[in-house]
Amino acid sequence: MSEKLTRRDFVRDTAAAAAGIATTLTATYTVRAGNPDKADTSKILNYIADMEYRRCGRTNLMVSAVCLGGHWKRINTVVPKNTDFETNRADVVSRCIDRGINYIDACTGGEVMAYSKALKGRRDKMYLGYSWYENEVRFPEWRTLSKLQESFDNGLRRAGLEHVDLWRITCHEQSGRHTPGEVEEVIKALEWAKKSGRARFTGISSHDRPHIKKLIETYPQQLEVICTPYTAKTKVVDDESGLWAAMRKQDVGWFGIKPFASNSVFQGDSSPGSPKFDEDNRIARMAIRYILCNPAITAPIPGLITQAQVDNVALAVKERRELDKEEKAELERAMDRAWANLPPQYQFLKNWEYV
Image (tube, rainbow, N blue to C red; front, side):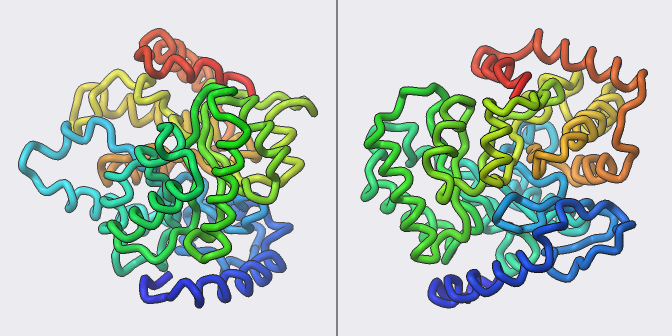
């Protein structure tokens, strides 16, 4: 989508496009790599035959089965000090486009700025998800409608954006940390952003299952997409009282953060040519394959720091989906090691074994 598109055009064209996409793709939940089912791919952004695409809930966007998460952990292992970081990000985004990846999820102010620049002139190739968490409701001073509006407008202005495809506000991890009034302010902000054309779709990110479930049930119209943790240990419980049941009932899109358990699943340091390079790549592909065995999730969104890592996760989409007995055992050992080595700030991932 061109940056020259005005918000007025955006509001008008989004409504028309949504109707057309819904007609074409509502019944098409997955377009597999190679398109063996001969689905109409003309409405899929940046369609590449080697990539799989999944319907992102009632947004009706067809999103690549693996996407680019905003975090760039361990980037110092491939971008030495005083080297051009922006070139690295632009190169990774370019490789994502080459591989058919069509969504970037930016979660921090730094990520928004970096990826907005990397996408300049090619917004027609990738959807952009936005959260500037430092100026959102995790901090008390940003818990009113006016402050959220101020934050969003300032972020768009600083990043040179007219609009984003998804504004998903980053919320607190624990239920009860927001008052009902503060939650209402979040919902009003999302409504304002969508009505004004600043955000095409809206949602939240949270680490707290009961909190997410309650919000989905209370505000089904405003919460179109949810970001939650989802690792290679996560299992969906087919229980009508759980989070997944609420998401399914309201047709919510679902992005999975921390698919590699904040890199705890790996033994190497992510540097090219490291002794564990091939083994870690294999573990990464198995983790992606495991997650994609759940048709409910739209896509895992790993942070990727090299073009080779982009190639690796794209390869995982093409590989046989079900893990064999030996692969299951290897991945289980890797995840047990990850659980044992999780830093204190990521212990919450253990609460996401069942959803």
